[in-house]
Length: 373
Image (cartoon, rainbow, N blue to C red; front, top):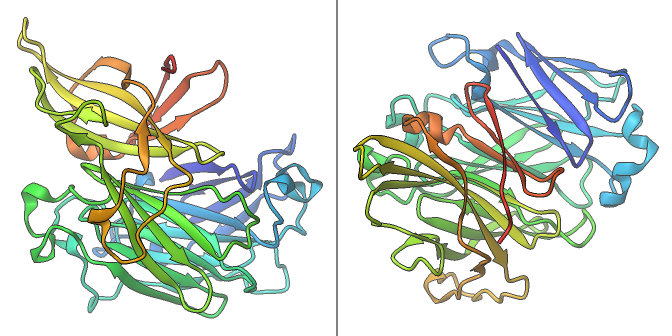
């Protein structure tokens, strides 16, 4: 088992090898002060005790006492004195491990655990071969020492909230799946949550109100969370991306087009542009062969959008505008199953302008360049 990643906000890289989680600063010329955190055995296997592959894991990292993005360039990033919390999630079993401060040598290295018990039920339990969590995001709680909130989404559309502290992890379901009948309609098993992402805050990291977005099979939902005086999560609005009007997003039911998947979403640092990875299952009308086409759809966020105070998303106006027609980045690729498609992750940015990296669950990275509309 080998999997890893980097966290831009904290300038830390991480890697899981065997039953250890390694964390280090990628800003340093040499990876000094690399920490090895032991992963409890209760997290390493699935419910049958079988070892898990790399793409069953996700990690969130929080830098405590940060005053904003400017601290990313400070020397603190290279030294142990930067207090840092880490969340490790087993996507298959929904088990969570939380290290409140990985650099605190005076405290025990053992993490706080939250295991998904047999008495708990999840709509995606009925979905064979499907990850029970497909996305996880986290944010620190203002004014609280080493406390954070994590939000996870299931393929069925259910959302789970984790309140993590040095003493315990409290979990609760904040949104039931949208499929009905506990998500047992297997033909609709992946119509719910695909990807979660925070809207970048222009204020300091102590902001008490945050917004996050959930990518679904047909569009994007906007959610709000209050981090003070009781954690309150509510949906603010919903917008269709795949529909009959191509001027507003992706037009469906075009000749030669057999299916459309919204796979992943990324928001730029300004919180202005939403980049959405789209896969389309097509049939060549000449040769009759099937292929997959990958595109990038860029939407502009209306930062001054006012959401209705009442919990009525039907009345919500559109909060995203289509910037330009979707840019094709992979014209023809081989046909893959849905599990492979849903493992694909989007990374945009870098040089030259328009660079895109698509990471898939099998470890492959596809690099492309698109021209902005």
